Length: 330
Image 1: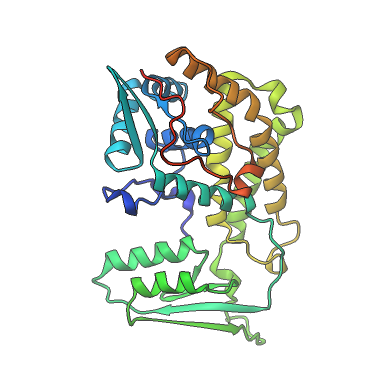
Image 2: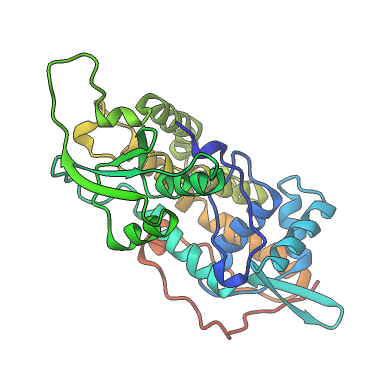
């Protein structure tokens, strides 16, 4: 099993209209941190952040000024950020298409594991064949399948307990024209010790270990009451870290039916811990980000707002793309 905790974060050099924010590596890159910070406090208000404020916030994560400037420059060049100049200063905000992608992604993270746990007992099976020499296309298809919650039962045979939507099917067909077949079928259980059960396509023990590690790391902070114990830059760092780790679980665990899971599956408990810490740190983290930006542009910034899990789940209305909120300068 390839863990998404080891997938390298890459913002490809592509046209802005094709930008799709990828899954994040273990330990955020400066680019990933910049996007996460801007998303956490500006995505719904379309607020601009002065360059100097972005540099300061990244510096609080140990990112050097040079590395931070390089990250901002690359994100702007690749269409992830858009810039604004006033005199000798500059400010940035997330590009429109990236905002839409992040809002959709935020909704996925916020609602992960909250739907009804129903399963009809059938599996979706994707069977494909592709020449060995087409390694790039094979890798792209496998990445697409993993992104959609599938796992390899055998080479070229991938499974999921969930129904394949028409949109997902179209994306897979585009990646394998004329070389893919899909089925929806039940697994026949025989009295044989050599038959592989479809659930074995996932390493459930490894997934559980990631959940337990997350709970062990963040449960103590939840128990103490995060808003009282963590303030300032520490609140921003902790809130960013808890999101950065939790946001990977929807790919690691594609909400497999509880009927197939071992007893006391820790998905629900991990979500409770995440929401308690992320929402509990919202107020002190928001105060700190506003203070950093105010020191740069000298004005209050009520447009900088830390959203909650409930905000993300609702997919809050985004301000009009043309709106300008506090385009401060560095």
